[in-house]
Length: 265
Image (cartoon, rainbow, N blue to C red):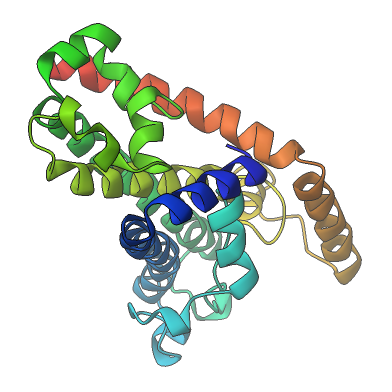
């Protein structure tokens, strides 16, 4: 969903149901905070296990959002669906053992964490789905329509007021849990895919450099500036958002198909 459409949907919801809107935004904020913080904590923790205690000494192995959040990155996550937090400080000179291996493990830790949370939250959502919606409703549209990104049920719970559809639910109280799971699932998948882009300072650059180039590529100030220009162009032209949405929908759809087969839904 584009920024304009998302803001229009939220504005209409705020006008018609302000209480429901603010309740929604409360656990939307929790999902955003957890997604960004757990990503950065994973980097810091793996670095600590590799011998670098820089993040630990600076208090970055904490769930205190003030230690992690980047204002612009957080706003981007809310409006664009992808964003970033303050990078965890890492000192590779403190790594014990193979530095290239440690750098790879630290770089991939955040993405692995987000992908794990995506898989778990989507699986839980798939389990809850038949408990939330009436059987005849699921039969009419298919279980996938209520779980896939931009599907019927997804849009009802993610950007709309689920209370308008209570008559279609058999356990309406579950819609609050389901909404959080769908938001959390989407945020984690988008952050994982976004961070795998091979553009510095994203994790994907370190993974690409470590695995393919064996650490030979060095980030000079000129290279950093050029990468940032390309990065900003991709964002403001909408190319990055469109590409990320396409990839995340494909991944989520494939995993969801597998889960529905496993659950016999």
